[in-house]
Amino acid sequence: GFATSLPLIFMKKIIILASGNGTNAQSIMDRFVDSNSIQVSLILSNKPQAYVLERARLAGIPAMSFNRFAFAKAGQIQSILNQEKPDLIVLAGFLWKIPSFLIEDHPDKIINIHPALLPHYGGKGMYGMNVHRSVIENKEQKSGITIHYVNENYDEGAIIKQATCQIDQNDTAEDLASKIHNLEQQHFAATIEELLK
Ligand code: GAR
Image (cartoon, rainbow, N blue to C red; front, side):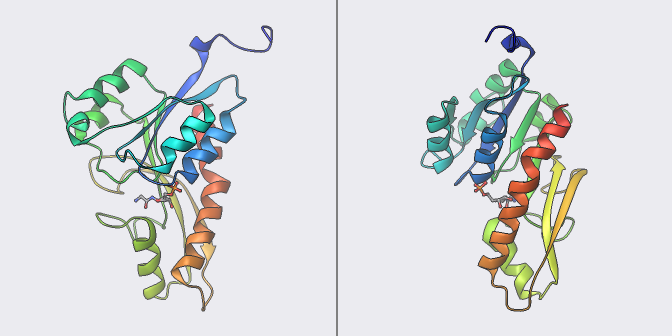
């Protein structure tokens, strides 16, 4: 009702960039669906077929896909982001490098989730199952998630939060993936809420 909802102008805005399934994007959408201070205002994907776009559609959140050209300097994405003025840009399983002009446009407002304990198991090519396979191959006893600010280099920005899980001797890469998935569900949206408070 009128008395309990703030005018939209006071809403903090999150824009999510995602490339795939979108389970992280989903948990963020779910957390703020009834919020009167924080909203997911837009979901962007570099893959037109990504299931995350269907999740956005089901949630009634505006979404679109873009190609390399639209992502390049002075492209459509830069203009959209500058128009929207998001309080936070969240990379949730987004696999392209963020160009430095976007980082300069949105200082300290772009964050990423990485499915390992950075500074280990990061860098180019280290995403999704690739990360879990190499953690298991190296017989690590723990792994985890890292939520961090995004800078010019892959997986090197300041760390905001880490959470760890134990790896059992017989765990496969798939077992580890599911432990990481649980950590992401537990911590990502909650950390975003903390950052926007
Ligand atoms: C998540 O595990 C995320 O941490 C990882 O991709 C997965 C996306 O899943 N991100 C990276 O590997 C980034 N280097 P989702 O699409 O279901 O959220």
